[in-house]
Length: 53
Image 1 (cartoon, rainbow, N blue to C red):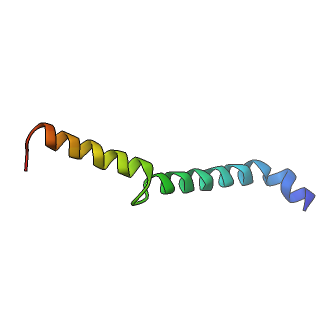
Image 2: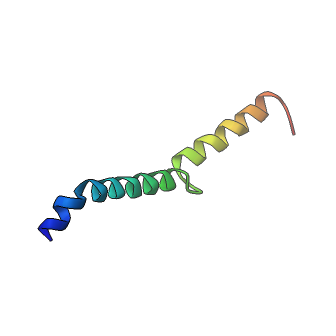
């Protein structure tokens, strides 16, 4: 086990970081996530200000 971590520790850390980043982005862009909500509000306000139906 020690040899595996000595040989592949960089790859393992990189893989875990990428998976964590994908999970965070997925949660932010989820249907009721904060980024999605802010984007929908932004588009709604844009249409209200331009008086489009």
